Image 1 (cartoon, one colour):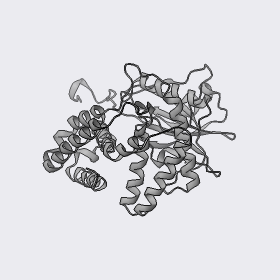
Image 2 (cartoon, helix red, strand yellow; image 1 turned 90 degrees about the vertical axis):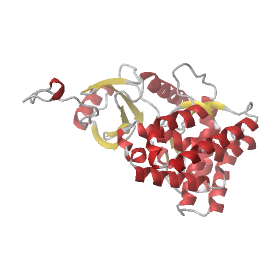
Image 3 (cartoon, one colour; image 1 turned 30 degrees about the horizontal axis):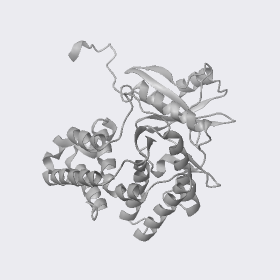
Image 4 (tube, one colour; image 1 turned 90 degrees about the horizontal axis):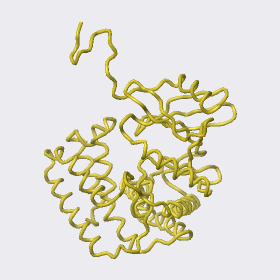
Length: 338
């Protein structure tokens, strides 16, 4: 029997996204990294696939990036920066070198080559509601990593965060899906104009810049029993204003307030505990903080554009009912700001 595009019943059908077998990965890790008695289990599908790797002595995290989703240059920028952060004493989940000294390996999957990186394990767990001690630990660690990342010079091909890449470019990608929500589209366009007018009225010449994570949500850092924080998941690493990392943490606080997880006053106080801890390590001006609510729309629209191109998040943008709910959330969070 013949199928379309020349495929027969007995031929291998093309694959767009495979799941690599944990048992085979464990055998490969034993050789490539010298992890004796290695066991591997699949734990998460996202921007890439995440596996828990362990033996009797240690635990690790293996990230296998999707074919075609991230360039090797992007992954190299991530691993190089994390390696520098480790060398500088920043508490991050860092890439580990294989027996040949490589940070990045290539695995030949059915859909094409996939990049793989083994990371140190971040002990502890995530907390949605953080104690003052945890907020202080997080603020200081983010400021310390910013001090290092601000020294790195962007080059051609690096991801950059600007109003173009956070607002306009992703909206162009998702605009067709707003045919069912024209009023929401108008609100976005009007909000973009307000944001850019606000930025144009602001002296941004002294704003700190560097490489940022752009996803400082609780799922991306663990606190151990002593409330020491470890940062991880730098998939969206790019260059931009450092305040954008603080903005993504502010988005987390606003979500907690919005869903009733904590009162508005407590949420605002928690954010300032984090900010003051950050300021104890490196400065950030009130002018930069003032811009955070305005530019936070860039967080939502940037990820909306990403979701449009990532089949694992199909419904967030392409289903009218889901899009309406998402826009209702965004507009509710920014009511009073835009």
